[in-house]
Length: 298
Image 1 (tube, rainbow, N blue to C red):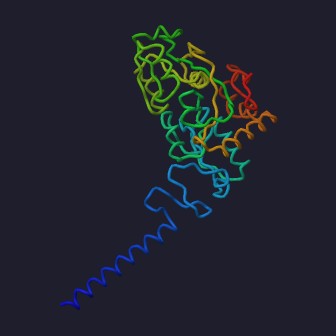
Image 2: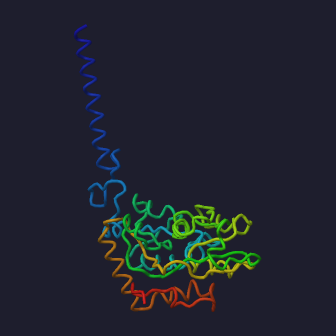
Image 3: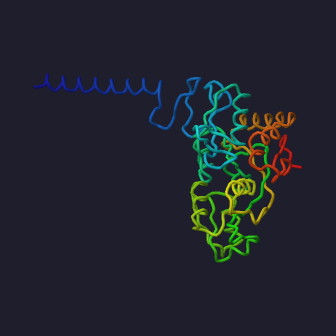
């Protein structure tokens, strides 16, 4: 009986040792169950921690968050390829980093969260710089300037924000339009959507009296959708659009700032405008009213 007990104790001890050895081995090669994963150097980076510039280069890929439904700035074409002003910029970033690019579709309300959780390295999704957002992410130098605009049906054109009191305004969640109308026009009923495509669908279906977002974007949409006009072309303050990285990712932020300055010397963003936006806007907009070169707003 005593021999049986000793044998059981010995077998149990061996089993425990085997389990510990397996766990230790697993920790050296994969995630360790504590939210960490090994980097290229073999050290562990906590989940949610942004990749450094060197880690991005060594991986051979930069991950950039863009819109998939905000034409002509970030959208997916009929071939399933990302296109637009932001994507044109993203392609150049990848080229100058010497890596491939992977685009990840984001919606307005998820942009901060995707950086905070390190789902992407950079956000290039018409990201307006605000004080509140700057407390959560780090913005690089601007590459575009913008104000709010309001598009509505020609049959009931909205030409002043006061005309929306008591009416329904369509907005996308997490945008500056949501903040602006909430703070300044509380009598306006806000119909909120996660996706821009759904918001425009609601406008086309007559579920709202107007839609507000960046003036550059509603102008492009109205050009392609007859029967709608941007009755309010500029609302609120003139804001800047900039890339963003996770808070504290100083190395990548510095690289982006240097990149934007260098691109400004070759008038890259005017070339971007000519390639991606001019075919949409035609004579309805001037590149100088939108483009920012070298990170300097004039």
